Length: 122
Picture (tube, rainbow, N blue to C red):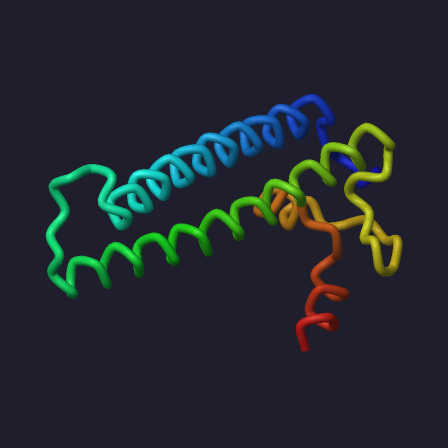
């Protein structure tokens, strides 16, 4: 594991992140259910105005994209928790070197050091 890091604090932080993501996903899915019901006329009071329908469709599609992003982040958090339990947390998956603590503080589910991540994105 990377030097100078508190396993329990990191686990708590990842657990908190996970809880927040699950809450946000559930809330957006609830909103999308309501939007879908309104688009299908299930709530009765929805206008047939084209702009309203387009706005509702846009909101629904945007929420689907946000849910997808949140689920991918949740997968990253879950993977970080598995690495923490396995004792491999804090090491770059590409080069094996320790990931800088500042990077892990900023992004606790980071899988690569800055150098390898930059190379991947470059």
